[in-house]
Image 1: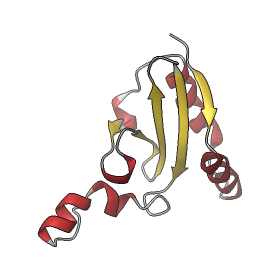
Image 2: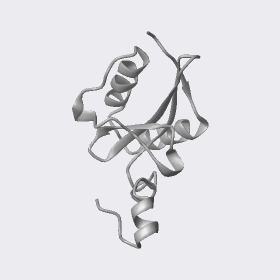
Image 3: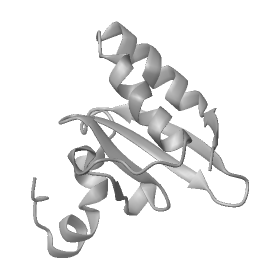
Image 4: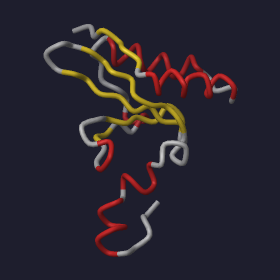
Length: 110
């Protein structure tokens, strides 16, 4: 199954920033290629669903602190690339752990 790859405007901005930061874009597009061809990512990418503001999307780790947020839109077979960046650039520390942080008044476990 091959997916059509679409980029959000925010992803395009994030990509420009990644270029300025001299990120290894080959690693990014290796992951995109696997996803676009319907492949499964190796465990090293820590691929998982997100919650909170990013509910309905998935995240994988291109590098330990460089992430790709994406979604696969089922019937249309579209791989929508939403964001790339570090945890702090994407505000994931608070959004991924928002339930624990907000409900119990605790700092998120990192």
